[in-house]
Amino acid sequence: MNAEHERDVDAAIRAARTGDNRPLGDLLQGYRRRLRRMVDIRMDPKLRARVDGSDVVQEALVEATARIDDYRPRHDHSFFLWLRFLTAQKLKQLERMHLGTAKRDARRDHHLASGVPGVSSVVFANLLLDSATSPTRAVAREEDRLRLLAVIESMDETDREILALRYFENLSSTEAGQVLGITANAASVRAVRALRKLTERMRPDDSDAESA
Image 1 (cartoon, one colour):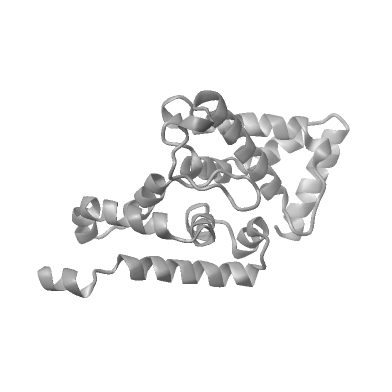
Image 2: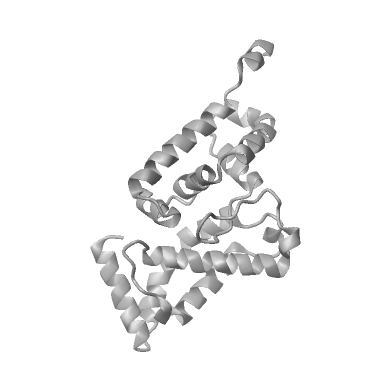
């Protein structure tokens, strides 16, 4: 978050604490798209039939406004990450309400540190396959799906999470590092390595090539 944006955040919060929520409302609207992205990739597929992602974000922003006095600036967490945390907590509440703990997808990860719902294997695979734009990849998409699911489920949880943060939520290395409790440089290195490992595991082995 740059200095100018930090000033905007501070000004909006100060105004809200004096009873004027308009600057804060305008500020929160600017985060809506990023928060919706997080919800879309982390919402349990079963919940999608019952709850719209926009409603999750809206409820979280309403809560953020009500709880603005709880926010304290931290050098290791931006205002956006506070909003992201509140949104993730709202998503978890709705999952418990509609699905119950026992009905959660068994292949879902739970975020290592912050309690943010993980990305389901199915959603993760769909995101990766949908990012493939070549005709060859489109034709092979269904053939790759089961193999990709197996690869994703075998990945280290931190590797899987860093890929979701960097490439699907589009968090910066600094933000991803803050979420995971590591440095920005470590987050950047981890993302590159995780992507490389995923790519290597998806390559056909020699026996596949010979049978083709």
